[in-house]
Image (tube, rainbow, N blue to C red; front, side, top):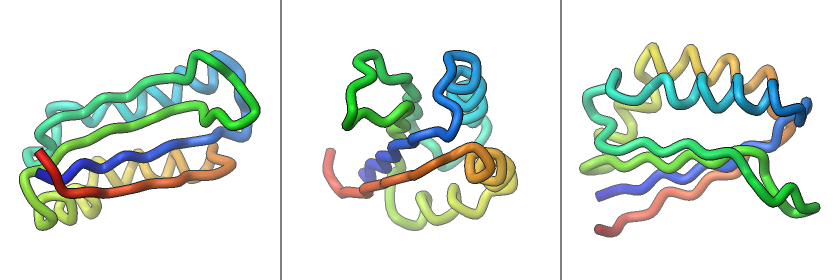
Length: 96
């Protein structure tokens, strides 16, 4: 199992902007066959080191993660997120 974790810091940190980005990310749930699990959450602490959103996705293997990365629906969301993000960090790891 591959776990894909992405943290997003947005340019506009208003509640409305964060919710719109969260909804865009969450809209992928159930629409990409290789995506086994998707969780998207908004930060509740709002500290100096906080990111605004977290995405946790799970895939059976690296090939499925790669298929997700290039899927047209994912690419639509990526285009939007890139337009509203200040920064993005990610980690992908293998585990159960």
